[in-house]
Image (tube, rainbow, N blue to C red):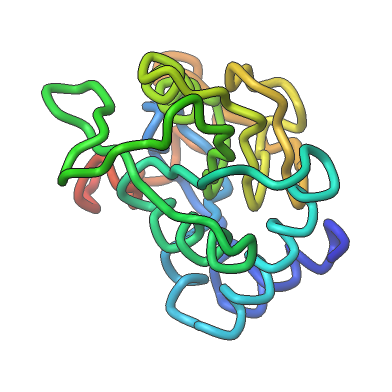
Length: 196
């Protein structure tokens, strides 16, 4: 799947939005990639994750398992693990830090592929990498649908995006005029949609 085909999947789903958005990183942007809308279409999700699994397999070989950070990446992590025919686990935040819970246990010295949905600053992916390595596993790579930093994000492991785009993101105190004039919404998983 080409980067253009990936973006076409988002556009066809109505998931490539324009406006004023507060990202889960706290940064502001005029573009939002709504991966949750994409995940409502099983066939679309299957196509994207089949491509993600193929890209990961080609780049790093076969992992022992896939791990994804909750909440938004769970669907994509599971579906990618299905195409790789390996177990799937997810980490979730407890008191602000990712932990492996719910009785999950990574195999000893597991070779792990982390699957993310959208990478912006790389913070969630990096925290997931740190959690997994603290458990004695080796992170082979972080695979994601879209890298909106266009390669600038540090995720703590090799980054394997299906598409990389350069979408500007701004600190709250450094908004350009066009965003200052537009009410902000916070659509991501770290906050309920609200006006800012």
